[in-house]
Image (cartoon, rainbow over all chains, first blue to last red; front, side, top):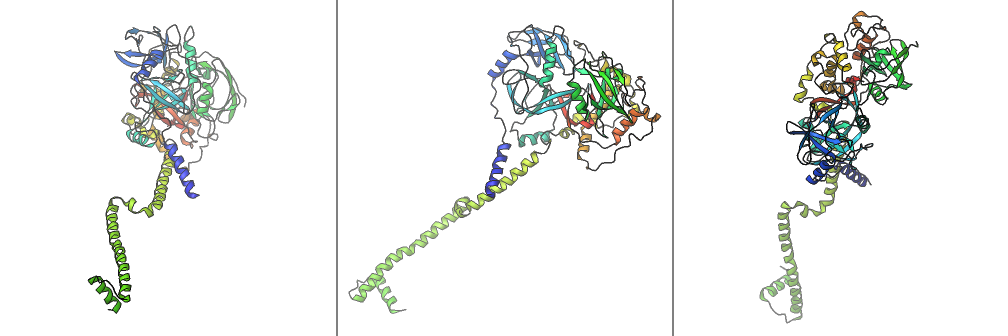
Length: 328
Length: 262
């Protein structure tokens, strides 16, 4: 019996250690089809920087802003022509740009639904279509520049030759996001990863915004006057180390938070009765609010615990008034 | 030598055909001995075979030692299983495959290990506030270079602190025992030195004014002194170039080290 048990454990371990998804070698045909249907290359100075995908039939293309820098990024069409486009809007939170250009017969792409752990996705590059896999649930992301919270999706691709910020499609050809960042690892960890679980080619761990945020951006870009409204209160916060809550470290002047009376040093305990366990929880709650919502925020300052009423604004613009009602 | 033996020798040596009953009996024994002699030659051949087998067994030990095959298989299986189980346990540790601390020694992160500027050294809260407040709210703004310089931007200073993966690594590996929480609520209010700490977002330094004297700085001082709660990994998206050409770098840091904004 013990021998059977050990052998079962051995076989189970071997099965788990085996790469999950056998990767079919991509073909140039796949890349061509994907390029023809979904994407157009964005060029700068004659070099391909990334790809744009068509989100409306009137010629609105979605692309990472890093690839669409400048007032007139160049779109490489299927027949080799290069067309100047115009940047209609930027969303600095998700770093996506809306550019206007010829449709070139491309398929208008829709946004993907929820992504499951282990789901197969495809990334389009200039040379190939790369098969990858969704890993885990949403990751807590934060933009180093704006400090804004961004729910991210993590992907793993068994190919380290990925180049550029590529659109990621699910198996139905719907847009999951753009690979805009990749995990920085040193050579030793790369070797460990290669020899560990992910095959001889190694992996690339890349991130895109999650489909929920993507839908928010695309729906904003599809409006007549393209605009993306991310909820904001105009404050910075971090984990409160002495207990639960989020410690406010900075309040922007004339922001909704400032107008509500929120100050640096306050500890946010709950919002509309829902406890704020930590800084991540507050960021998540805020991100899921809608612009214009009015919330009751319970805060503590020294020995005082009181509630302030705060109207959620958009993109740090001081467009909300707030009232503070102190309840000692 | 016994008489019978002498007779046998004579029979074998001379090949005599027995005539007497005794000789016939001896002949019968001779015939039997002949067959026995054939059998006697077998051990020699067997030895040859064994010698050849032993010679070949040097190259093919498994073939020659068939009797030991099953135990060796069991032992080998056990060894492989133990190794694989140990490896699986090792690989199943949290964040082993893509540990954020593994990026610490990357040359691109080397400047982040520089000592952080004291909070008093970065009191330009107004510029920090304007940095975020002036972000193009109306989409369409394309000037991505309008952000203030990092040296003058307290937000960037905080960012520098957060992006220090070496610090995260040290925190992760420190002992479990931690100091007692700082007595936040028992500290005296209106502490001028604390208020003048110049921390980012301080209402006084930002010109916002307001009441609650001493609370912000004291609470944030407690943030630096009190023990840290369990932190969750946060993916920090940087503007630096990542390992994939054309993509930004991402680092995993602990949420305790991160200042969120929104």
